[in-house]
Amino acid sequence: MRSARHQLAVSALQLLLLLLAVVPAARAQQETEDELEFSYIAGSANGPENWGNIKEEWATCGTGRMQSPIDLPVSASASASASGDLAYLNHTYRPTEASLVNRGHDIMVSFLGGDAAAAGTLWINGTAYHLRQLHWHSPSEHTVDGRRYDLELHMVHQSADNKAAVIGLLYEIGGRNDFLQQLEPYLRSLAETKEKEVNAGVVDPWDARGDGQSYYRYMGSLTTPSCDEGVIWTVINRVATVSSYQLKLLTDAVHDGMEMNARPLQKVNDRDISLFSPDDHREHYYAAADH
Image (cartoon, rainbow, N blue to C red; front, side, top):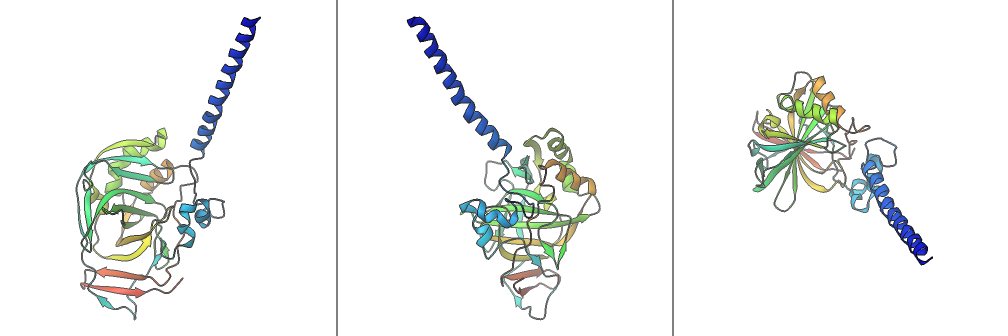
């Protein structure tokens, strides 16, 4: 009798332990499947207009006054004034080991060098910003005089005190892009196997940077949550080309619903937008109206 009760107690304990193990596993599986905490779908509960309400630490997405992206002016205006604050970009990039990462909402090239400056450095006003990663948005997030382009590349740099500086490059459909051509095999792998990360070998950021010395400069924010402000934006004033096939590779690899991953334009709120033009070696400043 005692043996039977003992066996029953053991069986009950085993069942309880099994249930305790299954519940967390089910919860973890749900979290994995629901890993996208924000989206780009206007009007949805986690869409761009609601990012600031999803998490307390994302509040800046809704309350910030220096948010990105913005519309950039196409040419000098009558109110433009010369300034000596800007000059040719001072940056040095070098080839380094990298991986291609599918973050669900975008495709990122992550540089793997142990040294903080392994992939190169951008110098702004005496501060060194080291290149950490680059990623793409389709269509472009920034617009120029109201025109939106087919693709935008962000080269994200970080200083020793965790301040960010981003170089943005705009692309329109045309000839094949040389930098993306090098990454095509890895992009196909991400799209076909749904892998999260693949080794991309040695990647040269100079190939991504391309040509163009003229650029816009303004103070803004990250364009994904938590939308932190204080980001120095440099948007190259030259449009490169990308093939339809390459653009499709980028959009096929991301998660469903993220094929168009551009945040809507944000208000300028009287911020100064400057344009460095090497043609005449002067900078034009725009006292941008709130729009």
